[in-house]
Image (cartoon, rainbow, N blue to C red):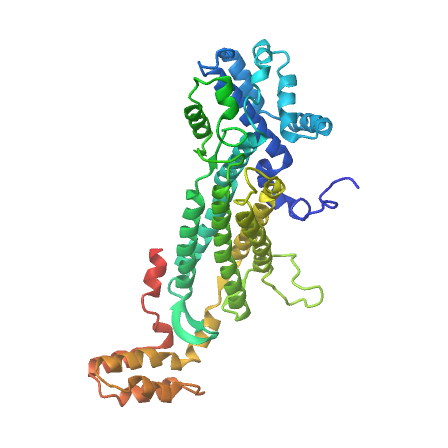
Length: 456
């Protein structure tokens, strides 16, 4: 079968391609080859600029411009040419080196410098930098903007529903009221912290040879300050130089970033499940879109499918992210190849992450509160005022305050406004406090919830 969206093996490249295509720019096979070409060419330019590498004179401005243009405009056809070379060599990074030689065959300066393409490098010197750039640039261009859109929408809901009271549920049972906006504000606070963790993860890189000691470098050019050159090169790519590695950069930064994404996903999974529950309770309604079908047999259904889709994809994403985090920092002795195939799943993990965030955002954009249902639950649960009543009683030294309210309310049906007011009326407390309690309703007993929601 020809590869199409209908014949693709994975849903990310099939059913959901349009929603995650932006990540293909960073994590496809083409993207990996493009990043490798970029690193190889940048390394060649850096060597040519090093006075100590006397056999490699500096490139002319025209040649530097040509090199930069090849890196910037690298095409699918050029990636296919490299794959054709790989089919002969059975080595993906060596194929890049050979292609660069062929691509610049008409440039006399680069042709004279052919021996310095991939000079003193192991494949991992190129790959680790390519992977670091893939993660750094996808984070900035795709993932953080997508997360910011979710955070922005949850913030809007926190503000819009700041004063809408709702009965809370602890252990699934009626509990002290809050406002809907405050519950969304809680999520905003968590997501902002998680977003900062994603953004602040440092991605290291190395270019120090076969076992991390500049062995070949020192043998060829003993007088060049290779650590300083490597530091400047890696930093110039926007990564943090790691001076202590084996053949592979140990991937601790990638593991930290995977953990940060997974932690964010867990917060959103919690949100998805809560909203699913609120829709089930009819606290929230979903806007109906013309033409959509909720059930193949039940015409009335408006299902919370976006949140279900989000939850499912968050689970898949975190399974992969947790594996990446646990596996990548572990390598036998100075090198084994188990990381190579695992690193190729980074795009899959982040694809399911992006898909989940997109689904969550679609669901959030359809939500609206259902004040009548919220008010009805509050009005049916006057026992919620047992907490403030017994707290005021404690203030005035009534020792068995808790026990009195427990006797009045715990496990009791039919607690009404009248029975609560009758209890308050008989309390031996100052009239001002009694009046405040008599004026209290479940809907008004929300503490600082509105302020907290508006302040987020």
